[in-house]
Image (cartoon, rainbow, N blue to C red; front, side, top):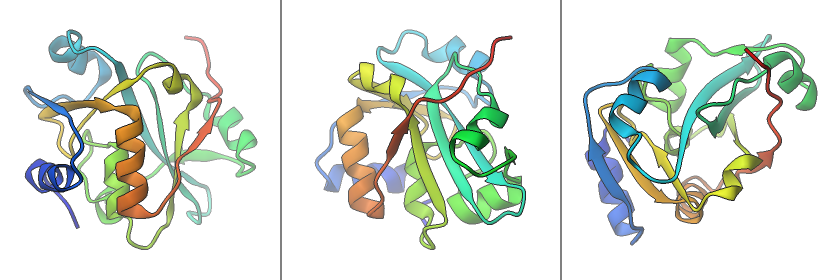
Length: 169
């Protein structure tokens, strides 16, 4: 299991993928992240680790930070019924990251292939994406296509792009 940014950086270097690293204090919310990362160009995202009621389906949703998700509509769209946030224990055991450090690259730790990865199709409008590198004490900025290639190469898993249903405040 890859659990820290140094291991991830080694993998990215071996894959010959370019990225920029921005160190900052630990952040746990979008609001905190924007205090330190608003100057970084590209899409800033948030990641939701969700499960169905029976805990038979897990998914990781990556979407632009400013969007609010309607979990009821998302569950209907995916034909899964009611979705809720997975437990911290599941997050650690399945994706190998701590709460506050959820990131699409954590899918490489899903050796059992239990998690389905969904990106909001709005992310296709930007070439650069900003994500945590398995820890919430830094942000990496890289090309969206490079990120997709890395995940698919390391996890043999395709990312599904969908229109994430949102809700207003």
